[in-house]
Image (cartoon, rainbow, N blue to C red; front, side, top):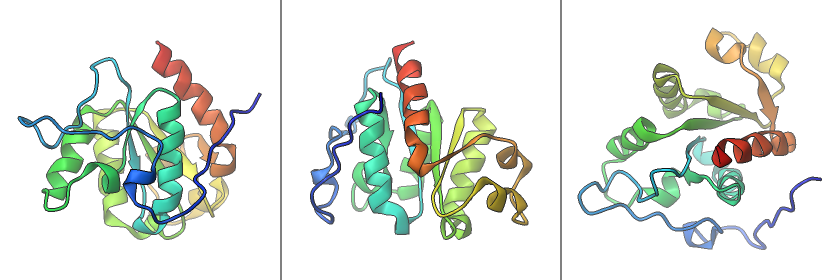
Length: 169
């Protein structure tokens, strides 16, 4: 049975309108959100043009019992953006990347993918506005991405069911 989605009734309220819990960084390590050691950490990589969609994905990840990292919600204004990103990527259990036609041109997407690949953590590719064939035939796409299973955003329940199983382990 598909999971019930509770999408927000309005857009543009900022991170406070998200249904996933506020993540507060400890004083001694402002770059790492405070979470229980057993909590599964999911880094959500996306283009700024896809922020609204990424917030909905983050909320779904949270409803599965995992802790999503979303830069807009989890990095304080004035913080060292790159350090915060790297600190969470070092601790993340998996990376979910929202790949859209415009996301493919964003350097941070590729840096985050490279960091996850280097750590050998699972990389989940959510496609929106692209088919697997379009992505695989595009010049310059690394083989490590081309050989992965890709999930269309409209089929996100497939990934979420797998995430629930990983959270329960």
